[in-house]
Image (cartoon, rainbow, N blue to C red; front, side, top):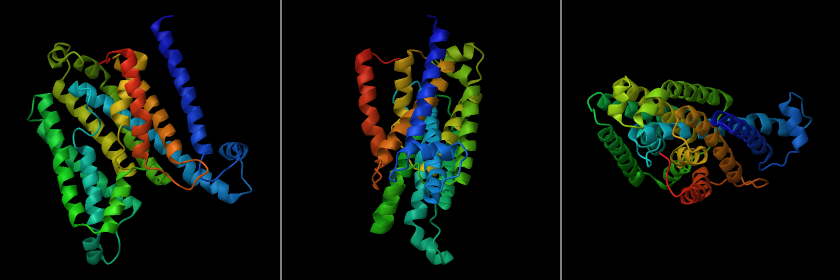
Length: 343
């Protein structure tokens, strides 16, 4: 069987798996709702049990869509960073953009006592957290772009990005040291990550951010393929390295920063899914890898969220813990079985 046909069949199977996992994510939760009732509501029917209908449309479906966007966006930004820096350990957080988002959230949460005394009321809401986190990630992104104009070596840019992350983490540590126990616990809970707190309006904003990042990534496919063989080879093909670097960094900043702002810092997905995809598809062609990581990221995030929800239980586990516990052994097994890394 020829490769194009094989890839086409693989994508059809992946999309079917994504639809099934998405449906399972909606069906399973702390409240047991019959599948027939969920299907009836999704198809436009009205349920007699209004509580069930509220749960389906105001919690489970937005949560499932958020998991798809978060998994897809983080996986895609991880692929962009690994290719740009030609480093298998690179992920969406290497430029310090997500650390900037965390710093913004830390300032709001752990500095809320001062802000409350100034304004007379608490400023901590899901919307305000998303706004300040977005501002933090945008400021770091702006700094990285400014430095990228002065630095020609990509590895130097990687190190500078890591330093931005270290500075942000250090400031968060100082804020944590002087914060009271209640605010510190609130920030720790935020850092666990969650895909279940977004309203339809917030989900719409996140969708736009991820869509822009996806479009920029698609426009970068040719430079990404060329960069795999080095910057000199990319130049010989007529790739504008400065423009391409800006485009890839902005796409990563939008994806990683926007997702962190709305869902918190979710680890592992961005680092592992690109490797998982390369091992399964056995290719470095970004026309194949880009859509594949988007789908794999969505599937893995939906599975992790379903497990974290602990069906038929009121408890919800930290999504960060589930992504690492579930995903790391799978990647280790694939790498050991393949004997070498496709990169």
